[in-house]
Length: 105
Image (cartoon, rainbow, N blue to C red; front, top):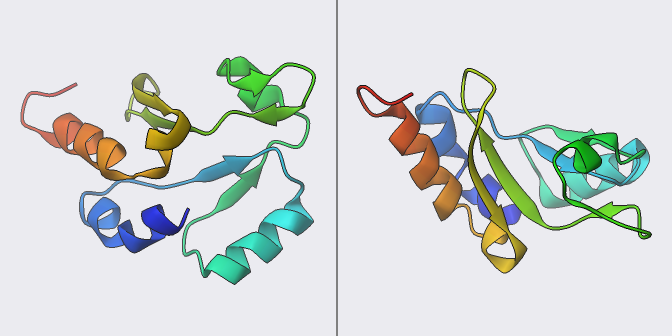
C-alpha cells in the first residue's frame, strides 16, 4: 500500500482510482490506513466473498493472496499480478497507461 500511496499522483493524474481490498475487518483497516497515511480507500472483504470471486482466496485460511487487479472502465479485468510483484505499483501503472492510450479498450 505504501508503494501505491507514493505513486498516487500518477494514478490520479490519469483519472484512475486506487482501492485497497483486504480480508481484514473495518476497524483494522482504519488503523492500518491511518498508520500508513493512505489517501485512497481500503475496503473490507471480511467474509472473503470478493476474494473468492476473483479466485484469490487461500482455501482454509480465509485470507487472500497478495494480488493487484486492474479493472478497466467497462468493468473487465485488464491486468493481474500476484505475489511479490503485486507490491510494486509499476505494473498497474503500466496497465493503466495502456488502457488510457488512444484506441485502447
